[in-house]
Length: 174
Image (cartoon, rainbow, N blue to C red; front, top):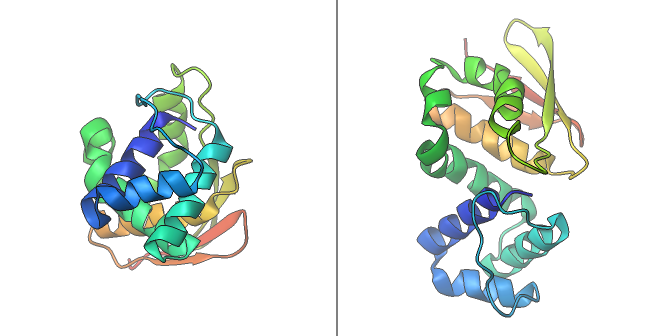
């Protein structure tokens, strides 16, 4: 996983819960000394998952709650520092979400070892989109949180439902 995800998680936790909670989670995850992480650093997925699971314990939140908090923070606070151009190019949540697969491809094509999730799209009806999550990481709960964050960003009341470990249903209000 890229360091930018870990850096965003750290910023979210320290801003919303305090630096002590971040340090406590690292200790609980077996990390005695916080390493220097750069946005393009490669971080072992298992280490990131240990930290996320430790955060669940330390913050007394479920995995889904942490995923939702991350999704909201990433979309509405953090990612604008790096990816504002992608938000500016879209007028609606639907438009943004339909570009996510191509954005992942474009934004990571020059990053060594980047393995972002891929998405496929299926329309159930004119207001209902099924997004297919393609990743070996199994972090579809984070995708759900990110989609909810996109709805908030575009001020749209999206109905987001995880159907299984590979599909999310999104009902748009228009």
